[in-house]
View 1: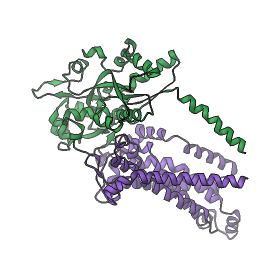
View 2 (view 1 turned 30 degrees about the vertical axis):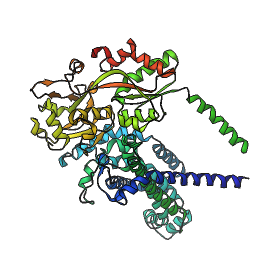
View 3 (view 1 turned 90 degrees about the horizontal axis):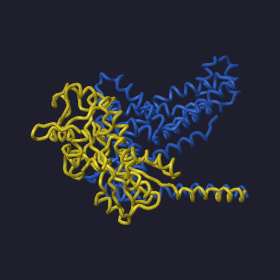
View 4 (view 1 turned 180 degrees about the vertical axis):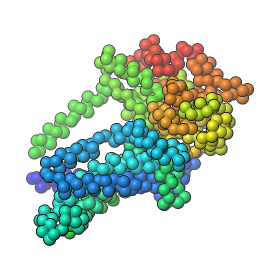
Length: 289
Length: 279
């Protein structure tokens, strides 16, 4: 009986997902007809001129999330090494609960803090680069890094705890110091779990909307000429999510092409985060220990 | 097991039924101020269940009303023919409850740097990025940090109507965008060289400052209540409640309240002009 029910609910979950994707594909068909692949590679988004190029937004989303991860990863993993390897059981649980509480703070709260504090800090800190305002890709990335930190810490901690204690004991018995044990035994053995933690955190960063919306500046068509230069980080930009959160969703509604372009952004986002999640959970499951 | 699921399902239905009695309102953050306060009073005095939201500004109000997701929309622009064409089944009815002006607001450094008024041509040049520095407008050297109100917002529509004649005639530009009034005020106040369009009642003269408009004959018109009422100040707009067909039930109570003396006082309290100020 239980088995039948679990099959049933798994099926419902899968069917919902398939239905969702189908709706997104179906609703965004007009824009694929109109733009073709240019929808993904086009750099201009002017809806009144019927031009829909999503590349600047894909760029914005990817840059903001990757920078957030680069900032959060060393900090989060360091914290995880501390909780998993150095703390005894009780304080470890206490620290973990506190960090996981951070993950439960609503994102609009982070966004408002971003407007109140972070915008101004970035604006003043980089004043000599002559920023136009405090709304920059970097502001969004720093804010996101704080938001994904709990994910990185708690999943990395789990990954490190999953390394059998006997391995550590063996390493210590062979004369390795504690830090050598961590560097050469725990971390390498937990690397699948750690990669999974990073991928899932990246997925969370990509999908975050409100907090990014409030500090990223929401400037369309701001694709830098040199993709790897750091200067664009100090300018306003647009991400997939900030576009989806804007009032354009209301304007586009009822116009099949414009609406299709908006839904298409959702589809791109869904594919990106979906791929990361699948990759992340896949990494976590397999173990070569 | 089965029973538990059935119970859980049955339990969720009364919740659905109860929401049907709620009066839902959505739209412009500008119109929201007096309406939210009116809703507060009606909740207390008449025990009405009212939800007021501001998703997507005026366009959000129009589209959610058109979709039947709310019973009352709030808008700071008239319902356009395009909107009517999008929702052929909806019979939009506009109820005029007051008037507001759109101010061009600047940050303190610009104001103190000496820029107090702009001409329409100068504003157009800024919007088209032909002028990008305050020094070309009589101010101190500082890049213009222009925050464009999101297209679809009532404030933006009024602005482009005045500069270009219609939203469709406006060139498409890519500036950083701002949404609600609070966000706009905060961002302009916190940015050197900041400029944006904002509902005049929000321009407090402490954090952000409202520029005058220099007319062709050289006179400068400030967005004061008097200038708005006499239409001397060109950037003003009506504030509407929208209903689908004649308002009835709870929606009617709300509309009548806002048109009553007490409701109109709320309109005035938030810095807008009452209907009788316009005569």
